[in-house]
Length: 162
Image (tube, rainbow, N blue to C red; front, side, top):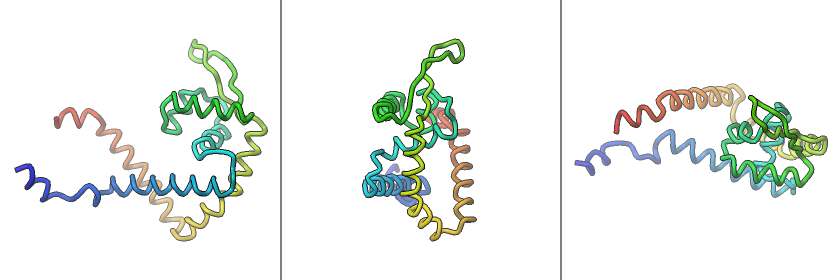
């Protein structure tokens, strides 16, 4: 019975979930290659943190971890490295009546983001040339919609089915 059910349904490797996972891995590998090629002096994850801090310079480690989809321990290690490089500063402050370290990008960090962006921009544009901008935007919106549906279904659906 179980074998028949498995054979009658589509394979995971033929699902949208597999395609998304595979695409994410390709993006990560390409990012690593590009950053190594240009000797950026940053990892992709470090760059994402700096880029994030450019748009919101009042974030703590927990906030950054949520945005970059890493746990707090790994985020802390990345922040330690960025601080040693002089690209960020962490200042103790109070947030919601609790002491937290707010992470701020330094001027050296800002310069590093712009230099790195100049180096990787041609690669990003090359992808956009192959996929029409309107299609690119459709993909972004569809992925956001998919994440919302997955979030709405969440663990409650899994527990109810189990």
